[in-house]
Each structure stands twice: as structure tokens, then as C-alpha cells.
Image 1 (cartoon, protein in one colour):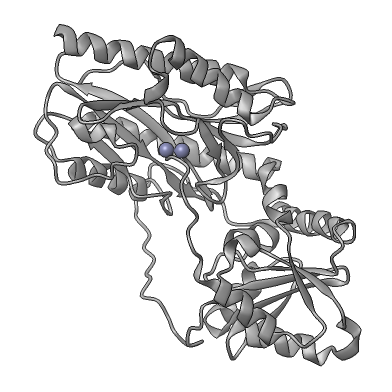
Image 2 (image 1 turned 180 degrees about the vertical axis):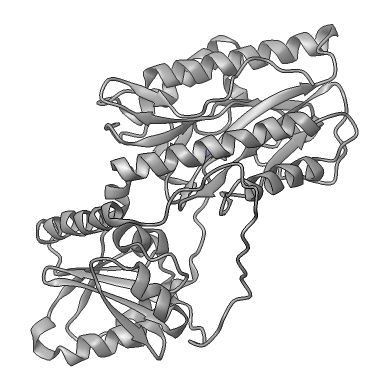
Length: 409
Ligand code: ZN
Ligand code: ZN
């Protein structure tokens, strides 16, 4: 999955507090893959450690508290997995606000924070809570997830708080989330292993005549059967000329021989995302078209390997991007590589850092990024190969286990 725009989160929307979504859970017997275990004591310790680390950064950031509204950030800090929650982290402790739908779940999941069940919109509950503390909190400067708030939400927040409060953008949690701790790396490894099995399923069904959407459906069904919570994004199966669309979601098009199929897919397991792309050729890769396709494939593979080899602590992400770009330029394909080389992955499919030209973020052990160069010839075909890698002390660990040789089906 390529890096794109940000998605909105509904956490601050005004919803009736007794609204219940029609979500049902089912247990499928005969699961072939053991899903990650639910939060245990060790994980509870991780949440406390994350909040402690954040508290240590408040004073040096000139903040009295951080109001966390972006749900992946909330989950990261206190373990809450629901769809409505606000976490206020202050020097003296943390308070978590949710609504009555999450009374039981909130009390069960949330670690390291006092749980307040709001009978009204969360922002108003927060405002009341702040007002009840009166002068104690006067003139507080509160950090917010401004990247994830709409203008309207920010205004509503300012209106709900008593006068004297000031709001300031503070992406502290995003920065913390870039470096994964041991628990997170374990969850990510699990998600990547499960995600990789979907490509085996794709190869079982991928034949001339089958529709892209049917291939995606088989993969997504296999994912749920194997214990995936959901897909990390709508599965991309793009065949023929559609393979030149970097984000060609599976359509009703029947797959025809004599072209590439780009398969870009991922699952969420234990809250963490996987992201992988493999491109296969349909039919015999013969003649001049087949030869050109194979050459492009080999160049993309070489670029993917060169960028992976460049990943190590202390290197700027822009240099990783440059390593991939250099190979494709040499092969005369530079101008067909139209997107960035990769992105961070974790609780969200796209998170910091962006692995793109000129980006100066320096890699550190524990960061997890994708390496996904591709080339696209509009109207003809495209190729992309994507792995997830974790930055290690020495270099990197390639998490994606699937082979990358040219495959014709
Ligand atoms: Zn992908
Ligand atoms: Zn990706």
C-alpha cells in the first residue's frame, strides 16, 4: 500500500451516546493460525511505560498535559480498542473519557488511566471535568493531535474547555510510535506472517478468466478464517493495463493472459497491520513484450533489494529512497517510478516515517517500514514489489517471508 492522504477519525464526532453499531463477532472453528493473545500483564506494563515516557516529555515540550484524540494513539497509550475515546495525560496522572457503549470494555481494556463514562459528548465531559478542577488547571497549555482534528473539532474543543486553556499542536505520540517496542515487534511479526499466507491463496486461484474481485475475495476470506481482525486496506488486485494504476483496487475485470497482476494486501492482527505486494505474470512470458516485462521486473527487484540493503540505524530515510531510485534510473526506468519508496507501518497502515526523496528522518532500531519500489507504464502494465522490514542494531530484519523471484501463472 502506497502512502497517501490521512483518513479522518470519528472520535470527536457528535454521536448519540447510546448508539450501538451492528458489529457482530464470530468464532470460526478450525482456525489454522493462532491469533495474538489478548493484553496480558506484560502488555499492561508496556502501556504504563509508554505513558511514563510521554509524561517525561511534557515539561520539556512546554506542555501541562496532552489530550490524545487520535484513536491509534489512544490505543497505543492505554490499550482501548473502541471507537470513542479521549485520553488526557498529565503530570499527575491520566484520565480516559468514553461513552456508555464502552462502559464494560473501557474498564476492562484501559490501563494506567482513570476511566470516566460520559453521558454526553466526550468533549463536553472533558470540559466539565476541567471546570470541576477550577483554578488548579488554570492557564494550562494542552498539547493536541492537531494533524487529526478538523477545524470544527478544534473549535468545539476550545469552546468546551474553560477559559484560560491554550491548545498547541504536539505530535509527541506519533514520534514515540515510530520506534516499536518488543511487544509491538512481536505483534507485527505475527501480522506479517499471517498476511503472507494470503499470497499463497492468491496463487492457488489466480488464472486467466478469474475476476480481480474474486481473487481478492478468496484472499480476504482466507484472512478472516486464519484469525485476521480485518484487512489493513481494501485489497489491491490490478491486472493488465490496470496494473499501471499504483492503487488499482480489485475490480470486476477478468484477468487476461499476457500481463502483470499487482497484488497488494495486508491484514490486521492484534491491532497491528501488515503490508505486502507481489506482482505475477499471467501466461507465458514470451516474445518481446514478455522480455520487456521480465527486464522491468528484474530492475524493480534489484531496486527493492538495494533499498533494503541500505536500511540500517543512522541512515536517513531519504537515502533509502535514493538507493532504490538509483537502480531504476540506471535501468532507464527512473521516470516510471512515480511514488515514494515506503512508509512506516504499525497500528496504522501508513505512519511515520515517510521513506521518500529528501526526507531527513534518521532510522533507529525498532522502526518498521515498507520497501516498495515500482514502475508503471500507463495503458500497458506496472510492477511493484513490497516487503516490510524492521530496523535492527546492525541493519534490518526482512519481516516478509515470501520469495520475490519472477512468477508466471
Ligand atoms: Zn502495500
Ligand atoms: Zn505499503
